[in-house]
Image (tube, rainbow, N blue to C red):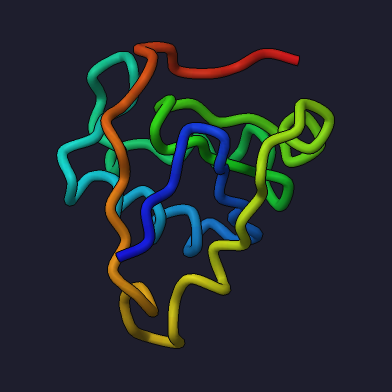
Length: 104
């Protein structure tokens, strides 16, 4: 099992990848800080190809923001096999903050 911490964010280059990573978080009972289910809103249009999600913090921002602040960036495409689920078992720690979005 791979265990990710709150310093790991997931870069989704496509809206499809965004939906996949958010679905995995939702399966483990995680929601946006507002209480909205992850699967109900991807916020994709805010950053599009630069979108990164911090699943544990229940936040999102641009890849550049997370890079500048020293987060580990994992490419969502590398977590999935084509047409399948995660390539390995992934378990997220408990959420850390009830915020929805980090601002630049």
